[in-house]
Structure formats: structure tokens, C-alpha cells
Length: 440
Picture (cartoon, rainbow, N blue to C red):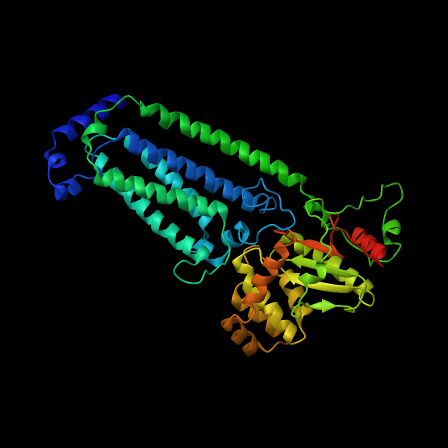
């Protein structure tokens, strides 16, 4: 049946006078003929797009980009700050109608794949409609991708995100390639290619989706297993007791093995940790202490929320002897206004109250501005000052600088706790206290 419909299309194409006329009639006859090489190329590109965007979803939702943008390059000291999929994918520009562009991208490439599958089996009368409908989607995808590239790179205006996402840029490259192939289909003659049936494309349209599905299942299984091995569980959610020099020993019930305290092997020690500090950092404890504890966190990160009471207990125990430094680290654009509100709260001596309330009300996709203003009212802040600071984006550059400075250490995920530049792997209260005591 598939061969019969292709022969019908070739016959219709060869008998149509519009394919042999001037350039204006050539445009009128565009996208009316099945062309094995071009249509197969568009189908293959759409399948690759599905692979890339689903892989992007896996990296964002399963492992939170803890192993780099592609998932195969774990962070190391000195990693570049100019490739950050987490910030781009979760930024405000990373959404359309409130839905992540990751989901839009997956749906977009699946739709184009289905269109390609339908085109190879379409009858001659339905073929032009399907090809032109696909062309419209390809054109939209191309121009929207170029907008997102500009948001990241700032070719036309200053980049809104100031970071680039390798996976997002790969998807944009696929969209651009599809657009070019579509233009070739529109503005080149059809006769020569339409007569070729040697590629037997029907096999491609059957086998390639099966291969892609198997790859995606393997991709999901691999990174799900990898995520289970990540030492995020170190941010224990169990009830904690105030820390002391003897906490590690006294907190272990009789008959149970003591928790092994380890450093985070993903990151090398960063001896120049004081270079990460600046005058805008909220701090607790003496600045001249021989021990500095730096906490990187995002107010919308569940693991950071679990770590928060642990750090509060440690600060209460060691605030007279240890310099604690808060480093709000925006994983996504939705966290930026909340972090800016924290800096405004610091101006008014309300940082810890703002942090406590944001952690208590945490939403993985961020708090709306009216809820941030409500927190400010509840803790006694000057809300008009908060509004003016947020409108002026007074602390926006501080947020971006914090990410770029952290990238010098290789850090690209949170929470992270450094004790004199050493990344703590087991982020329990007992283990952090152990490393503080050793440093003291």
C-alpha cells in the first residue's frame, strides 16, 4: 500500500505543469511532492530532536544537572561559568505560557516525527497539506529557537540569562538545520528526486523510532541509577540535636554503627575559599575566625530545605567561634527574585527571618511575588523599599556573580557546604560538626 501511494504521488508530480514553470509557479508547487532524501532527513532530525530534549528533561528532573549539562562531564575545579543548563532551562525565559520549554521541545519534535510518519504514507491529495503544515511548525520552531539563542547569547541585546545551555543550543541547531532543509524542499525542483525509490524509506520510518525508544529507555535507566548513587542523601532529614564537640559519638544509638563522614569527592578542595566572599554576603559569627563555613543553597531546592534546620543548629552552637557565610545560589530564574528579596531583607536586618519563611513555604517552581511581599509584611520589612529594589533589580548582578564565582570551584548544584574550602559530602549535623571541630 505504501509503495502504491508513493507511485501515485510521483505520477501526479510528473504530470503537473506547475513543476515545470517559472519561479513563481515553482513556489506555488512547493511542498507538494514526496521527496525521499529531504523528507527522510527531516524525519531523522525530528527523531534526534526528541532524543536531545528528552535527555535534557532527564538531566533537569532526574539528576538536576549534577553531572554537567550533558550528564557525562562531572564538575571539576576551574569549570567554565558560561555553560549552565540549569539556570537556562529553569529561567523565566525558559517557559512559554507557564510551561517549561523542555516540555514544549519534546512535544514539538514528537509532533514533527508524527508528521513525517504521516507524510510517507499520505495519498497525493493529502500530501501538500501535511507538508505545508509541517513547514509552518518548522518555521515557528526555528524563529522561537533563535529568540532563545539571543536570550542566552545576547546577539541583538544584552543576554537576559548571561549563561548558555549546551543541550538547548543543540536543539536550536537542530531546529535551524530543519529550517534550511525545508527551504531546500521549497525552492528546488522536484522531478529528479521524486523518481528515486531506491532508499526504501518506509523501513527508516519504522526502525528509527524503535531505536530511539530503546535509547531513551536506556538513558532514563542509566541516569535514574546514577541519581540514586549521588550523595544528596547526605542532607539528612532526620530530627537533629544541637551540635557539640561530642555530638558525633553521643548521637549514635547503642548497637548502631556510626555514620561515616566523607568529603564530597566530586569537588577538589578550594584553598582560596576567601576569594568567594564579598561584602554583600549575609554572615553570622566573627569574620576573623580561623574557620569559615560557606553554605550554597537555593530557596526552592528540597535538599536545601532539609539542610536548613541542620545549619541553624550548627550556627546556634558555633556562632561565637565560627564565621558562617550564606551564599544564595539561583538554580533557575524563578529563584532570582526570592534571592534579591533576601538581600533587601539583609539591608533591614531581616535576612534570617526572610530565609526561614521562604524555606517554610518552598515551592520547586518558585514563590510568586505577592507571596514574597506577604512574607516581607509578616516579618516587619518595609515593603515599598522591597518593591523598588526588585523593580530596579538592584541585586541582580550579585546573584549572577555568585554563580560565576562558585563555578571557579566547579560547583553547579546545591546544597553545598564548605568548611575552610573543603566540600562536605556527608551533610549531616554530626559530620559537619566533626569537620568544624577538626578545623578549630
